[in-house]
Length: 273
Image 1 (cartoon, rainbow, N blue to C red):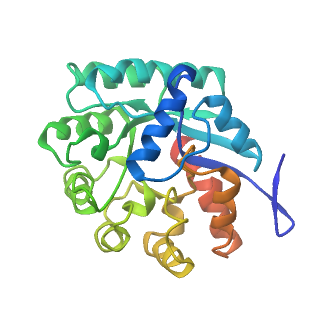
Image 2 (cartoon, helix red, strand yellow):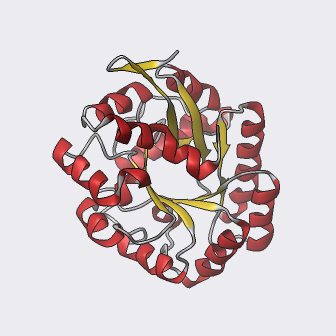
């Protein structure tokens, strides 16, 4: 189906989703919900993601999962790659953990499997974004032309504070990255102050933010970062596609801004048609 807004069919790409193997999906979804104290009702499988996205005509999904232990990184990366082969609408990110035994080999595997980069969730992994052990990883990501999706913010912790990403981008300005949650979940003011103009390849996504910010705050953040740097994201299964597209369109942005954020920026970043 197509999602019609103001008489026009929208092209939509979701730049922030999570999927899990069927045997652990329910447990994983509830664990994430417990971490954020947010009730989670959506399924965590690839099939559940597609079913949710199809309701608004989603064309592409950026899919990932987080390695909370170093020994999980290889298996999660393989799982994501396999799901991308099954579902051509998936754009995949491998998993990474700061304590993996062979970082170079894992990143080379990510590239060989035709994944587009890695996902880091510093609050789950309990490692600062600007930890020295991650600097060679960012260097190699630049060399391999791979992207990193950063979970950002959460005022309960300091691992993923926006100012830490600034330090990374000062050293690696060419790093292609997405600062999730408007650059900092629950740290939105700090994100605007720190990250506006912080990197030539820095993007932001709308995930897990539109439900919390007032309309004026969200619009201000989008204009601060630039409509050419924003990506629509749901954080599925945290939120449904129907709810998130309604929240996004309620911002009443100009048509060109909607087109950029919902699809064109994703298209440019991940080279999809």
